[in-house]
Image (cartoon, rainbow over all chains, first blue to last red):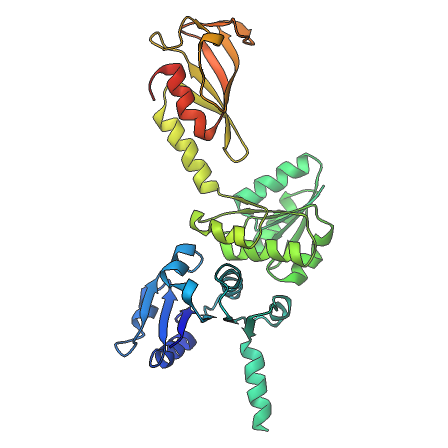
Length: 130
Length: 221
């Protein structure tokens, strides 16, 4: 059973959390209580209602023990900052961040950081449709 | 020096004007187009760039690689961290200074190696606390983000050090008496100088030693 931290409970975060909580130990972090409530009763994991830029939030989410961390807030800069800190401070093996700006994706490339870009993904899928 | 300031709120604006007066070369960057238009008229001799400074292209436009210092004073801590990171890693800027909006975010500034995160909220809180709590003591100057203070202490009648010479007084560590103001006279003290009630003492002290210094001079806090 993996310990997975998901920061940002938007559409993607929510779907991922619901899916993974069936088999793994999932903690979801969001600063909006409404977003966390949207996880519904089927979600079988921990919710942390707090600001991800505050290091005590990451402690509450037991990031030290995490095998994987996902940064899925809609804020590229927040995802990058918190993602890098999680990698550096907690040495989490896999850190996956959503970064929507293609330029930043290139600059912030680092070992152990997987940067997901929505535009690239859609383009790849569209190409396969041909 | 060439200084790039990103995020032009009140702080950025005052800073830009001040640095320009001191004949530094200054460039300001802000997202808001209407603000930039106004700044272009208001800030004479300052380069104004409109754009999001978390994008490297915008920093490049500001020729940030030539900057001696990058000051990031946007209202968003993640943006400030990213800007300082880019300035340093991508453009080799030697010194990065940022305004911390929420003191809880300071550890992140440190992990991301911002050289000088300035936590204005805590600094102001400390000054207000001082002003509110001690009537016989006045903070004249704070140096190094408030860690070193120059204070003025009025010696009351019942002071434990009244009528004693400096060599008889044991002051707490990390503090030193700089001068004594007595009526029209300014005395630079030596060991034989005697402190009298009514003297105003100017002292330099580290913030941690301040309370002990005041206790030694006044007898209470």
